Image 1 (cartoon, helix red, strand yellow):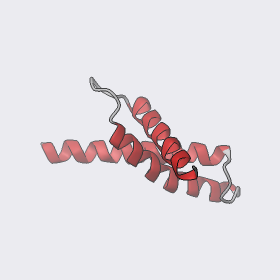
Image 2 (cartoon, helix red, strand yellow):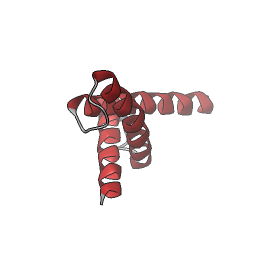
Image 3 (cartoon, one colour):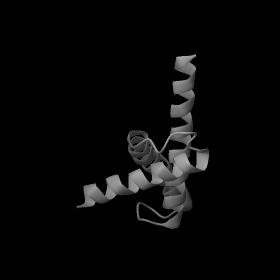
Length: 86
């Protein structure tokens, strides 16, 4: 059950990152949302929680860090896709 919760949280964070950065004419790319959310949550959430001194518990700093991490991963993913197609 925890794994399903983590995947759903990652998907929501990744979708939020796409909405913040703008979707363009397409809908949400759910594959990118899951990957960016999980990677961003791990990197951003872990770093933000440790910097804030919260440890590894679910805190607002971890959620904010997860969104920031997903934004960074989504932006890098989009940049690499546009660079490889041109």
